Image (cartoon, rainbow, N blue to C red; front, side, top):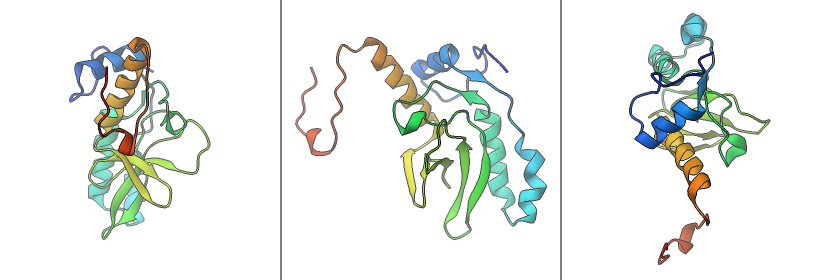
Amino acid sequence: MNLNLFNDVPDGLTQRARSFVRAHGVKVDVRPVEEQRQWWLERDIPATVIDRMAAYQERWGGLVLPPASKYDGGPRYFAADSPEGSASEGWWFEAGMQRTAVPYSFMIGPSGEFGIHAGQWSPLHATVEGWVESLALTHHASMWAKKIVKITGDEVAGTWLV
């Protein structure tokens, strides 16, 4: 377990997100993807999918962040597992175990999107970086904002933020 992530923050994050990961993240040991490569290959999982999983694991594997305000907290920690899909649909793989018992899985989509799969694919962010950025921004807002108001859909049009 790495409790000091000062020099172990993935590239490509904003300063806010890097600071958030340094201050609130830890890294735990996770099982390397390579240990299961042969087993997945024998089950017709394409090598390119396993390579994507290994790259994800190298970059994000074991990262534990504070719970998200939605989606039952988000993944407990990032770890690639359970590839699903086909050549025609594309391939997803599990982004990490959920914090609570929920009827969906956090997944990484065919193009690297971070989202939820529950019989149907629902991307939440274009990248894992987007998910981490949203956690950092939510944390920042909860610490500093005097008032947080959620607006959606048609409410957004014409809203003036003061």
